[in-house]
Image 1 (cartoon, helix red, strand yellow):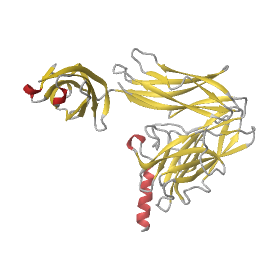
Image 2 (tube, rainbow, N blue to C red):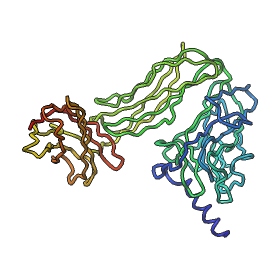
Image 3 (spheres, rainbow, N blue to C red):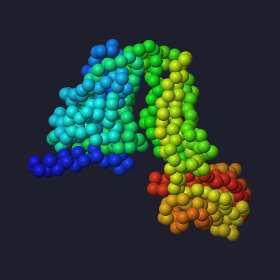
Image 4 (cartoon, helix red, strand yellow):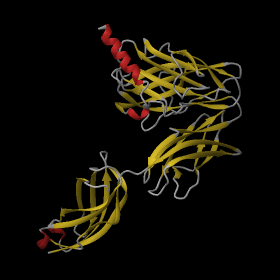
Length: 423
């Protein structure tokens, strides 16, 4: 039994070294990892604000709420260390009651374990551990303390108490490399959202933070991230928001915000959505989208690293999807014969679905065709769909939508047209 338990612990511990790209959250519930005040029994309803005088200390907690069962975690927390300098961490009272394979890294100094992850550095705390029992420590919904951090307040100013992002971090935050990982005793990665905290001991101010602060998308696609605008030091008032993309290139990616301004009250926060889109002709490569908030004479920016990859799906090209201009249901047996002009930029055998949606005086018309492509590059395929007799004497105006791949991603191209039905 001891040998079996040791084996389980080693398997879970090895999870902490797996790159984020190889992990997926498979839990049933999506919990919340948050920054909270000491003694908290739940996550705050919004971004909490902390303050304190220079030369004193501040202790905050990293709290988990509403998660699937957990057997361990690996969480990084980051501050501006010229304002809040991390001094120590504490697992007392943690959900993980018997910590094992523990790493405690403070300001890139190893208290336990090693600071081998590139996300470590000045102002960063990493705590990773698993329960020595090899079991999950709570059932769903799992809520409780993960660990506490004590900071030395070494300066005046503002800083977020947030989570760094790094490609070397495995993550519970879907579609990101945010350095927050919560997992079960069998290695299943739980899905989690995150909520930051803020600190200010200077004049009224605000912060602008993108979570996650890195996005990956493909030509013809888009991706989104949340931008949290928080009052610090008692700031209240409007904050206007803009976004910009660099470098500026021909057909480069575009950015947009769900709102161009927010209004804050003291200690409050507001969230807007940043959408970054790339056309099929957007050059692949790395870009930076900066969201800038301006309140009065004060401005703050939050950069988002954007990677645009090559489109590897399927497109309509040329005339797209075309059928017979007139379908004589007697002559064709009630079938429309379609020709689809497709450009497969992915692998041989890629699956596609064409969904046809039409309107007519006889009512709506819908049809679906699915197949696996036997070619790459440009080619045509033909298929038939049934035209019920009720459409005789009407004109059907349609739009065809194309989906590809195992997850049936929608293609950025579609095709429209019309045909008559006779007898």
